[in-house]
Length: 268
Image (tube, rainbow, N blue to C red; front, side, top):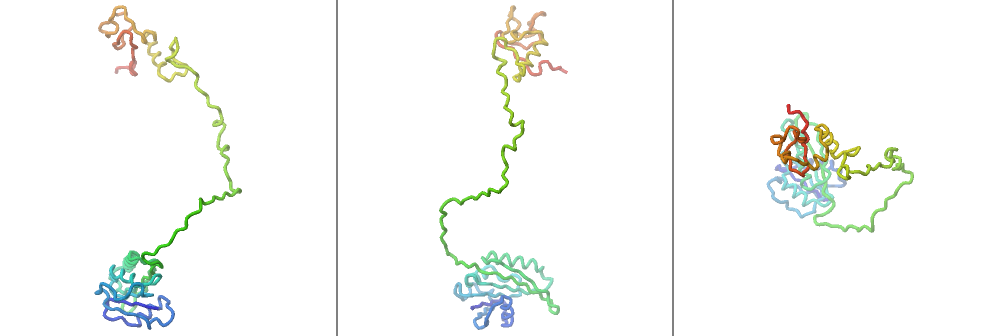
């Protein structure tokens, strides 16, 4: 098993690497095939081939370690399904550990790693140093890998359980819903020789007839107004005192006289 241990410090003790490998529960003699790189922050690329390491361990006293380019390099050299462990130590009070953990988890996820697990240890009673760790793993697939999708042979079958409680639609109808609708009586206020309003008039002719009755006129006088003197349609200023159209608006002879909706409303 190939292990890569990196740090931005000058030295990295093997005892530290050994204790961190125990955190990952690695089996066998892991230090025999361990590569250690110090001052890793000064490197733009790691001198290792892609997908050559089974495990990567990062140790630092800097809260910003590792940077995004270094995380990309760790992702490159790690084998598919390989694991990474980042261990940071800080003085208590420098920055809330929760902020550092969330920032580190976010960077690891953005780099492409999966299933990050964060943990923190209690501060050391003598040094006051607290250690936080984040574990993650690289996806099991490689960049550019592909797989074929099996074509469906047909639509999926829907199984209906006969024991299911189905609602009868007829039970949702009331007696009122089952009654046969009553069609309106045949009739038209504007049709027929009498041209009278229907019993259930809804076109407004009944209201017009009521206005005419108050004026003392007949519907024929409004539908086809005539004038013996020829001045009835000019308005009240030209009408005589006995004119039947007195009080009505001006109109043209032979055209129906239209009454406004507020004709009989009070002016005040």
